[in-house]
Length: 340
Ligand code: AMP
Ligand code: MG
Image 1 (cartoon, helix red, strand yellow):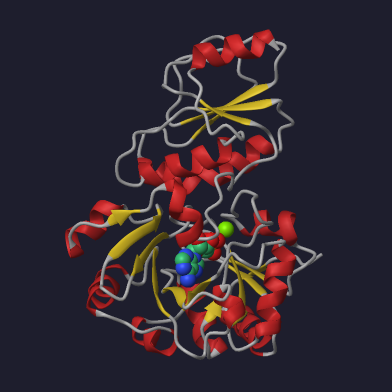
Image 2 (cartoon, rainbow, N blue to C red):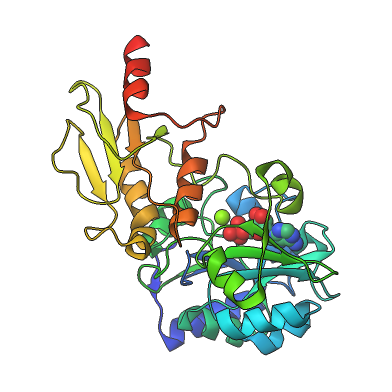
C-alpha cells in the first residue's frame, strides 16, 4: 500500500523521476486527482489502463506544462489558440488532430488527442520535471467516483500506483470541460465540466453540444453510468422533500441545508450559501462520504442548471443512471419504493 506524500520540491522531483523511468504517479490538479504516465512510455500508459480497469477504447487526456508546448502533441488552430490564451492553465480540454509523438494507446487509436494545461502548481512542476507531456485520467477505478483528495486515491488504488502526491483538496472538484475543434474549425462540446460552455461561447461564439446518442462515438468514455457510488442513487425531480420511512437507511445530498431532517440518516450539504462553485468542489467528497455510510439509498436534490450547475447535474444524472435513465420526483419515487 502506497501512502500519499505531501507534495514538496523533493517529492515532486522523485515523482518526476518515476515518470521518466516508466512508472505511474497520482497527482493533484485543480479538477480531480490524476493518475499519470509519460506519453514517452507506452507501457506505463498501458499500466494506467490496467490499474484503473479502464477500457482501452476510452482515450486519455494529455497534460502539458504550458500552452506553448501544445505543438508537441497536436495541430493547433486559431480557435484553439484563442481559447488557450483565455482558459489555460485551467479546466478546459481541447480535442485536436494529434501529432506523431502521441502513441496510439493514449488516444485509443483516434486521429485526435485531448490536451490541457492544468491550473495547479504541483501538477505543472511535475510535468515540467518529467520533461514530457503526461497522459492522466482520474486516479480512481473506472466508473467510480473521481478522487478530490489524496486519501480518496489511497483508498481506491493505493496498492497499484508508484507514488501519490498530496496537494490537498482539489479547487474545482469536477472534471474538465471537453471541447473538440474539427478540421473546419467547428467547435463541439463533448463534456460539461469546470468551465461553463457560456464562458467559452463568449470567446468563440456558438458551440454545438453533442447529443447523448452520438456522444459515445465522439467522446468514447462518456458512458451514461459514470462517477457512481456503490450505493444506489435517486435524483429527485425537484428540491421539495417529503418525510421518509424511518426504517429505511436513506441519505440526502443537498445543495443547501433543508429546513428539517425529514428522517434522513445523514445529510450532506454541498454549500451553505447555495454557491455552485463551492458545491462542485465538495460534490465528489460528499458522495464518497455518503457511500461509506452503509446506506440503502442516496437521494440527490437537483441543482440549478446554470454555469457550473450544468456540469454538476451531468455528474448527478450519470451517478443516478439506473438503466432506465429516469429521474424520479420525490413523491412518486417514495410510492414506488413502498410498492416494492
Ligand atoms: P478523463 O476520463 O477525465 O481522463 O477524460 C477523458 C475523456 O476525454 C474520455 O473519456 C473521452 O470522453 C474524452 N477524450 C479523450 N480523448 C479524446 C479524443 N481524442 N476524442 C474525443 N474525446 C476524447
Ligand atoms: Mg475519470
